[in-house]
Image 1: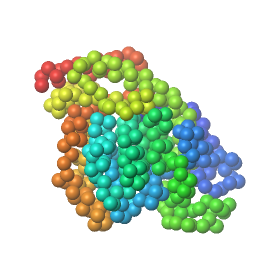
Image 2: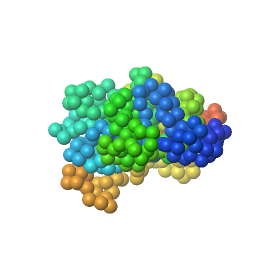
Image 3: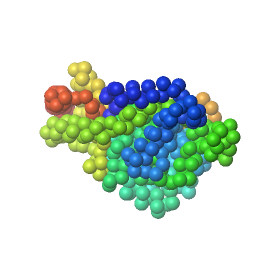
Image 4: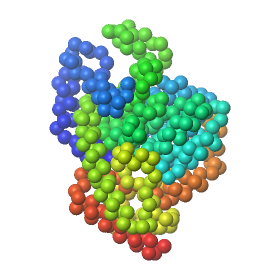
Length: 401
Ligand SMILES: *Cc1c(COP(=O)(O)O)cnc(C)c1O
């Protein structure tokens, strides 16, 4: 998963270009910056790498999601259908624009179950937001069909799946908009940063202004810019963009290492007949940041986790079901509306409803699911050793449960 594992001279060089001019801001200072425009360069690299028309950098992936919502006109009274398994940032962004998150069950793709989505549609539904978790994709054909039928927006949270594709198109470029995160543990990193990708010029123009206080960026003088709408400051800095520029140039290399290591580990685990794997709607498009797999029962899965813990080798294996940040079960702050400021009534009602909502189908999947993060640094011997240790722990859990 993480680009930080292969940090080096390339990042240093791009950062030094910025340090030499001292112009750390992405806008203005045209003379003193001496032709160094790292943010603009990175946006261009994103559009070229992922074959989309427009990209807007932001200060984080969360900011990218918030920006995308605003740019798509999602706000108070609008419902956004999203999965019960994601990182908290997905619902934070929905709430931040005053909209209402509607959480629904996942299926074996580890993201939105199209049937659950259909059932959740109301007259207030405005957007469907699949989250392409752990490097792989949602069933986008089914979700696009639902969007067309009900005239809904599709916003892809592709923060964890940079470089993954679905039927030949990059995740994040298929919906009305998509988002990436470049935080420190993502496939490529800027330290902190994110991007909104879109093929819609209007959505892009909205993103461009929204992330910079509403500036229309039409003038040569920032002070003379007009403000056609309200915005915020979700800008990325030139230092962060410089790191991202080095990283995006390494992306294809990262992906090929991930795919090789993922295949090797999967081969080892597949020798255990009781192990099954996540459903991948387009297996060729998996970015392979994680290998997500299932054991036959909750008891066996928790026994495996305990065994790995006891041996001190659990690191890199994520049991999301018990995790505080990625699954509805532990989102008590959300379900109890523990906000520092007042939410609108529709938001409050929807969140309180989560306390009694049935997530049996998601529970059944997540109880038995482990995601193993794939390192860029593993040697073939290390993969074999790691795989063997995992297989032994699995066999022990199976034998005793
Ligand atoms: C990381 C992540 C985000 C948020 O990105 P940040 O850059 O950390 O703000 C959003 N959604 C998902 C699914 C993520 O994994």
